[in-house]
Image 1 (cartoon, helix red, strand yellow):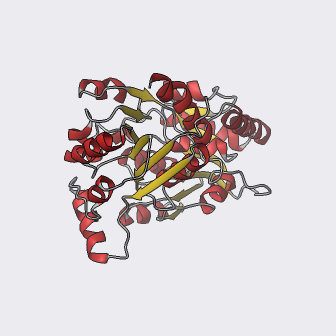
Image 2 (tube, one colour):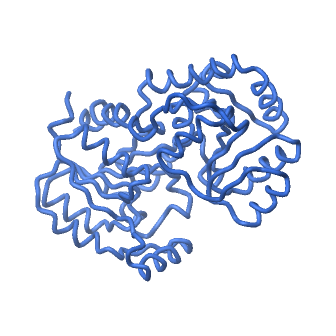
Length: 342
């Protein structure tokens, strides 16, 4: 059944470099009409921006933008309300709009919503109000139900077929690359690699103390995020892309698990059950579960170009032929699960 007859109110942080914005654009391709409410606090109001940053770091969330008031007053016809990680959306607002429009309420998050850093009083009080919860964390399914969630669906992480496109004719210039923010477990592993003489290139948000430490071991590190198209180019410039999972989020897969091979990169990722479901080991991706295995596989694939290229090509095909994109995943989610149960 086609989804292009539905009209949706989409609420989330719509900054152009975020995955929420990518989903928003995907929904515009899937549905008849999508109305957006942006919850992202931009730097144009410096005081509000830094207050928001300060409070968020202390796990306090406030509706600085009066989104609840704006959403409560929304008066156009809609079939669904989609809230992307709704840390500032009140259950009262959700109840009002549900009664007014007789619509279904959906909450989505790419993060572990039972990690306290991803929670807020707004969210916890709203769990029972939503008709559906969509999570990329398989263990959140039962946890959400134990908090009173009505219906919970698990969905794998996705790549975006516009933002995560493969760029042709890029020659690998880096041996082993990692893009991602600091977390102590991954920092210690990367530092051990550097001490073993592995040539590393690191990009992402890292503390200056670690930047200095890595540079002492001749690591090419630049402490900043990469966005499209720099992100795509970097992935393809690396002969090997390391994929670490965030321990604070109890990750079994992450967005980069899909984005790296979808952009044509060779992925060497932490070994998990979910990674093995998504990709055939040593055929579409390569996995490690300890530092010795990681080093051995790095050395092997740096010296076996043909084997490495076969795997990265197979991983690319797996992502595109198995429907791992935002467009195919969310189209399938609505057709086979949400619309089916209405």
